[in-house]
Length: 118
Image 1 (spheres, rainbow, N blue to C red):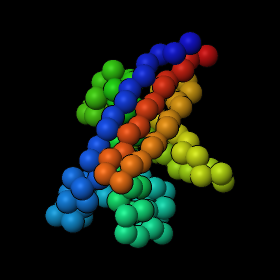
Image 2: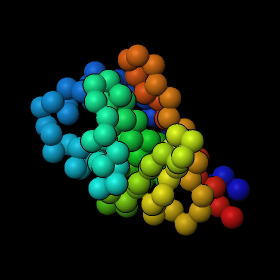
Image 3: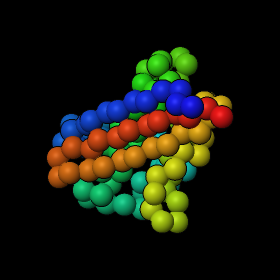
């Protein structure tokens, strides 16, 4: 049974600007494991990665119905790629299954999270 769904769309240039001006943004949004993955990337792929994880975590918090804040924080959710390159939610506060999808164009990233119970 679907508990909640959330979507988000984020401008890649906006995220690149934030990362350039506020490097601590990376540690605030990414878990240590995600940060390790990020550091293996460069250029546009690195920006796509951080923007995708940020957007997916925003989508997750919308699916929970809370937004990012006390109930759900960026560090509460870890999204890593499996061997096939598919993003998978490995850590989360929800007691069910979280499905995540991340898509990019040259200028934006769009994410969707569906939370499923049982």
